[in-house]
Amino acid sequence: MIYFDNAATTRIDPQVASVITDSMVKDFANSGTVYRLGLDVKRKLETAEEEIAQMLYLPAHFRIIFTSCGSEANNLFIKGYGGIKKKIASLGLEHSSVLETTNFLRQEGGEFLDLSEFRIGGRLDPSSLKKIFDSNVKLLCLSHINNELGSINDPLQIGNKAKVEAPRVKLFFDGVQGLGKISINREIWDYASGYSISGHKINGPKGVGALIYDSRLPLTPMIHGGKQQSGVRSGTIPVPLILGFTEAIKIALRDLEVNEALYKKLSQKLIGGLKELSDKNPDLQIQFNSEIDEDWCPSIVNFSFVPVEGEVVLHHLEESDIFVGLGSACSARSKEPSKILLNLGLSPNEARCSLRISFGPGNRLEEIDSFIKEFDRVYKALYPLFRNKKGR
Image (tube, rainbow, N blue to C red):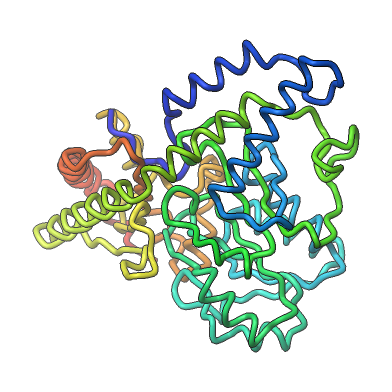
């Protein structure tokens, strides 16, 4: 099997699975109880929080709130801090958990600024921050790494500019695709007021994520109940998942440089192979939607190939045990083209005729050769069925 959809989810690391299984057996007590069994579990939870804080260089005034996933973390900060009283802005290229949250707040009467005109490709143009400040925006929501394109919004570059041009604007970064893919500089916390992460994107467990945020900011809870996690997020704390998540973060950061080098080699081989196919086949016109430059994460490559539809290609590749993505897994069952690609400027037809390849630590260079060979075969077989649908 060749698995090239790591931006959707990743295979759990055996070491992480072992930590979770062991904890499920031993740490069954509720961490909220006051007897010894519960207090022992609580100490393990506190140790995990301390380890994550140290690994990510968190200042003392930053807090970790464990959530069920990255989407919940995004909702918690955008609704909890932004709400309908603060004007919010985004590029329109963010994950659906950001876009749909801002849409919901707008429907409830909140103000929103679409920054489409202030972007360069898939990222924010930092020179636009003065205009954002003049528009009375209070919260700017961005992807650290875009989940479909791999475009990087550099928190340090944007944060430095924001301190001068837009000092009252708080910055929130969806870091779900960032953790484990690129290094998180300790200086990011000088600028980012909130940052979301997720376990299953880094070979950890599903069902756990976290919001990292500046605790000096007021944050209205979305879940009320037992006052767990300082009252910010009530609910029984899934300690085994959190311990597994912590282990996954350790492994991801330990192997970061090796994996960065791997993703660069894989993407270079993939891009070169697709270009070679396109040069040889006049019926195949490859268009790269990912901007292949210094502000791009090579773990994600998005490309189009009008007129053959991406979903049809995906299922034909699946028959050869090759698994690729169309875009965000949260929207994969929708028959509508990717909103991110449409907002980037692609036509509906171009967006439908696209695939996203995303790499993980387990991928190897020889898998690229197999993918290129199968993609070539599948495209040639399907092209006659689609050639009359070239209209854009």
